[in-house]
Length: 328
Image 1 (cartoon, one colour):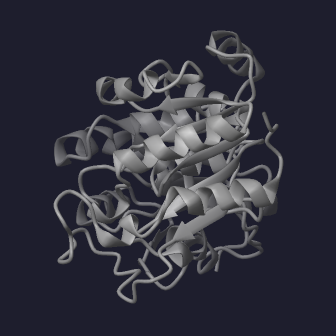
Image 2: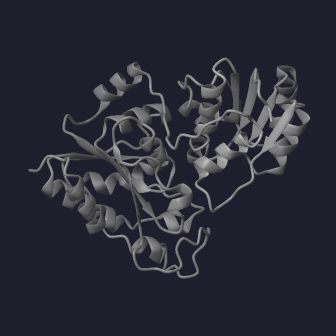
Image 3: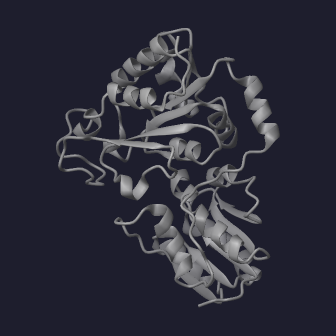
């Protein structure tokens, strides 16, 4: 077990939600060893998301996780003389790079689906570094100037809810029907004096145009902001509603919004929203969940029954119980 740390490299590439879930690794190290220098190897978008984080001293980025890109940065990694490399990526490529970087100690992540991802990542560091302590929380730092810029750019002065229909192409059990989203936004606007802002990438913008025509208080902001600016927008919202994907985890790590996550095939005990104020909603009927599989044998067309079992009324009940939105 290591008791003194000067410099650490953390490795995690890929999905922004996964990178965000590693944050307790570097925060626990900074709490125990405030003078320790922490570097983070990741891809460019997650690096942008964490770019204002006071607990990370330097980012090392790659466009794609290829052998060519990794071997190009390998000499730089060797020259840093890391005390510890904490590799949080269960891939041979990155395990090899961690080994060749020749740190004094290497700690490799072992995926355990029975544990929440935040703790699973944290325990990778805990097994090799003394004096660490776990806090079950997420935090993204957004500079005030970005918050102010985004606030000015928002299309409404009303209190607002952010929604995301993003589900990603690789997980069938994360997609909620478009007609469910449409009913939900109309139910909300008919009852509460709020606006609805849809977020997403530039590629999502066209598919969200139908929502703009439903009501004058529904806005399509997909592709308008980068990832840190989007985090700023989320931090200004009352709620964030969406499936178990990166945007809702980012929102859950900002200061203000209450997040309502829609969970189908994925396990709440594994990737559920972190924080007592948030809501992770799942099917109440199906015994096969959480299967955590990429493909559903019971799927009917585009949608899986585990997501179909979640209704707009389920979300409305949560909003009513929380009782924070202004009524019309």
